[in-house]
Image (tube, rainbow, N blue to C red; front, side, top):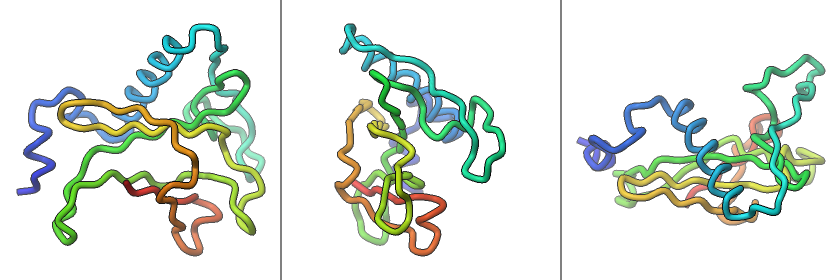
Length: 148
């Protein structure tokens, strides 16, 4: 049995799908950050076209919200156990940062990462550099990965 699965038994939000849990945690992070910065302005993401020109729905914007007119992307990851390396880690995929030769402009200006553990949530503003790695040829369309 995976130690991470055992650690998350009866933990709030653990029974939700990753996508649903991500939405709940992104909303929580926005509320926490807005309470910490009461003089700042927060608003929902602006819906724009996809890179192929088709219309986006509200649930598929390229960022999650705006903070003082900066685009904010919020991604969450559950603590995981990697048996092959015998270590705990967090992993985020499809992080669409600006990258030389791949993407002129990132999909966001600020990246908020949520580290979901069995006992605490950590909300962290990432510098879009630390432990960033490519996904090979699909990086241009899917984005980078982050592992902590």
